[in-house]
Length: 262
Image (cartoon, rainbow, N blue to C red; front, side, top):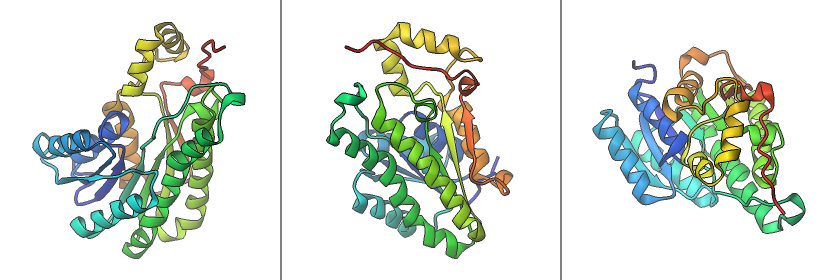
């Protein structure tokens, strides 16, 4: 307990799924939380949950990460309320299309890169001077096996997530001298998006689980949140520029999602 005592963490997309799981794990360890979420209802609910159930200090900041002014306002609100920012978790994703590469439109790709890559870039730039001036910080970016293994039909998502991995390594190299550590998690978790997919395509979901060495999807709080906690805490004080696969070993097998599309 208290591994993040008095630390201030921003978690984007914290209104559900992996973001919520990470926020809960941080709150249980003493962090003060900024729940940066597009949906007001879920964002307010999670902030109330963190305060009521876990006795953490938490605020909700409505944030559309695809809009640069919103990302800047998110950091400004954090500083106004808490006076510092120690941890940034870039988790939010704005949804994409499922279609063959030759049918992707410019709008599809631009949307994916805006919410999946530029949003992360903007947030990292916004927190940098504050982390630098206070003597350090932690950046945890959520990426995906979709990009690593080139899963089919999600080109904009894959491209954005692999770009974030390159961005993270670059930040790790350039910002190490400021004690700002930047790492990536590639998770496999039972998020609401996965649950919806499993309900819509149960045969594909079952096949994916067969390819997972542990035979299950991760729990957002217990399995993914614990890895994020490690990267956010002093336990990882000498770890930067890494990609950690919190996926039950799926990356070993190269799990592929290969539905039939016309």
